[in-house]
Image 1 (tube, rainbow, N blue to C red):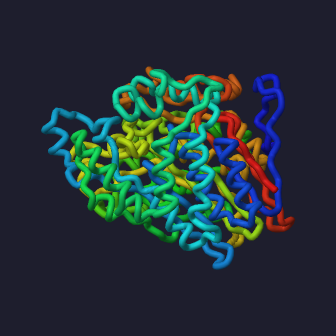
Image 2: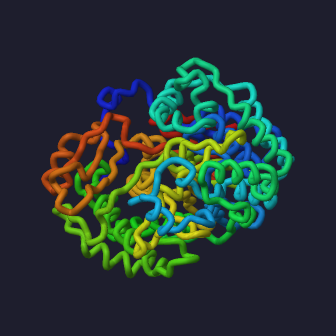
Amino acid sequence: MDDGSWGLSVAEGKRAVQRPEAVGTRGMVGSAHPAAAFIGLSIMQRGGNAFDAAIAIAAAEGVLLPMKCGLGGDAFVVLHDAKKKEVVAYNGSGVAAAGATADYYRSHGHKDMPLDGVHAASVPGGVSVYEAIWKRYGTMPWAELWEPAIKLAEEGIAITDYISRRYEERADRLSQYEFSRKQYLPHGRAPAMGERWAAPMLARSLRAVAKGGAEAFYRGEIAEKIVAYCRAQGGLFELDDFARQQAVTYAPISTDYRGYTVHETAPPSQGFLLLEQLNIIEGFDLKSLNAMSAERVHLLTEAKKLAFADRNRYAGDPAFVKWPLEALMSKAHAAKRRAEIDPKQARWPAGAVIPEHDGDTSYFAVADGNGNALSFIHSLSNSFGSCFVAGETGITLNNRAGRGFSLDPNHPNVIAPGRRTMHTLNAYMVCKDGAPWLVGGTPGGDQQTQVNTQVITNLIDHGMSLQDAIDAPRWYSFPGTDPGSLGKTPQLRAESRMPQATRDALNAMGHNVEALGPWSGGGAVQLIQLDRKNGVLRGATDPRPGGLALGF
């Protein structure tokens, strides 16, 4: 029987003191940036609800974490409305430009979609979600919720070592574009730790959104400026691309896992991958295995490969591509896939091996004492998205089109005007007896659903505390370019805190493990647990990026 621990001492983990969980009764926030967590908590302390806090956090993170999210990005949300006792999801992804066709890119010499620059971007969808949530659930004035972000952009923020390094990593790409240089490399270099960085151009756009909302962004002055500048740089956007943007509200997809209901964001989000992985591993007695045993890591890894093979074969924008989502999420399909797992040998199922991607995203969780809760993920896709700032708007555009679409006419994600690409972005909420029990998620590209699966099973199957579930040594499957690479290039990347005996056993199974730094397994998990019996909110945050959970 697993005792819930992961078998490593503090000394072995090279971390002096484990981060304590946060507790509260009236509000809880978990964010990858401490200042954003503080801003969200302050909104609730002033009488706002979790939905008000979420808008303020999202706006602030776009300034505090500009490489991860912002006005130029997308958002997906799963939330619980305590008044109606219902779980609702939001799709805030944008579409490809009116002129964006595979023929266009191939005729201009592209073999693959560009990953940066004006042609890498799709219409930003995040602002449409922010406003849709506020209109339905918000209690505080819209403009008031944007004030903290505006002040941060106008007055400047202190650059941390983490932020400075992220700027430095993308400095070469940012320097290629005039307004990207002006905003992010003001002294001809990345801002150093301890320096002050401000974004006055972005601040003006934030003020315009605070005043005019989504109308100003998609059908007013901001859209006009973005489209005009992009077209001057050879871009393919038209004003109508922005004018048509609307957030989509729907009932989330879900599955039962050992008596818990796991809700996820629907396609074009990849949330179904988490549900399929849980369905597959539900047939194994994980509770009887040690959480850091090779047997458990192997089963979760093989389940991931099978789910991703289904994604690669079928998944696309459901408005354009018909594919069997319900069948893929079914228990019957999981049983068939489960039977393909060899308990002693790593395998690559047909269609599983294509290059997968890292990502740079921000995830946060919010809950209030009334039972309202949000699982919220928003992103520019890669670090600094397209690295392209849209002129004097100061808005960094995402690179979701470049990263998600294909030029292969037979691919389910072939680029076409008005189409949404499949998103790695996903957010989940776990309910017990019809009420929220856990709000959670993480950034990390194709690592997201793998990490989420590990965390959920750490909690449900292995009885870990929130913080232990986050801190546990992390791993992820990362395929080579073809099945023949198995055994020749790293296929499973694991933090070095994973016991050596486990790594040796995994290598013997054919996983070919690459050891990462002790806390370098990726992700930035935020968790909030709603303890209804005691009326208490518990929060925990991932130490890897240096976030913070705050409650009151």
